[in-house]
Image 1 (cartoon, rainbow, N blue to C red):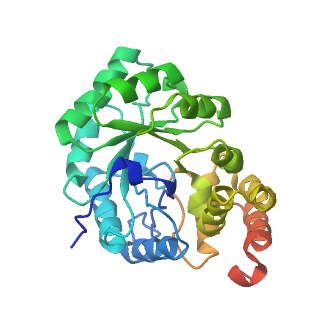
Image 2: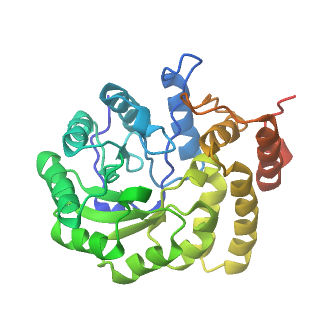
Length: 308
């Protein structure tokens, strides 16, 4: 039975890791491992959970699969933290279908990308897109600004947060620290700006971002929670030192198949999430070695499973 506790948008802050979708050798979801992953994340003190995002291979999930992983997440979290459901689709109609599929499960918000296949939409079309979704389901929305060929301007996102009921926040990606800073500068007190700039969490936190929803959180949630707490406590000396180790970890992960390396990194911590769906490839031997070394430096060798 899923939790019915719904968190207000103002309470969706801090470290919100995108959940990796555990898959077996047939690329089917492994529910028991997903539950294990949720428990692992909660044990590290995360402030929320985001199933169905990019790191969760949300673009590959059917509507039934999305409902399943969101339901498991809400059930396992049991109202302890907000759950934000990711939606990555190519039309308003598809977005509404997926939003309706998770609407009764206890999600506190939706994280929705602009449509992402080939075409650039004008500003009014994007406003209609998000307005129509919210009108259909009434669940608060975070804009996930990540699509390179449908990249939303700061002006448009500020406009949407002001004009579209239910749109309360932005997840800013694409290594765009300037847009991140401008969004924080221009947002209203009740709005929320989340960092998805994996290599630069420390400066985004120092700029007073309201939280992070980012793949590095999926790989190493504990140190990311620690970084958040250090910045909030004003301990910038220790925060900068931890940032350096997190940057080395991200440099070991980052690459065209970084999702595979992220999943391998989580598996090294005892949560066997498997490989990504094809055509993405598993992590190479060199990538595995680099991840093992960086993870040992970050967490200590005793915290890393031996693979030999």
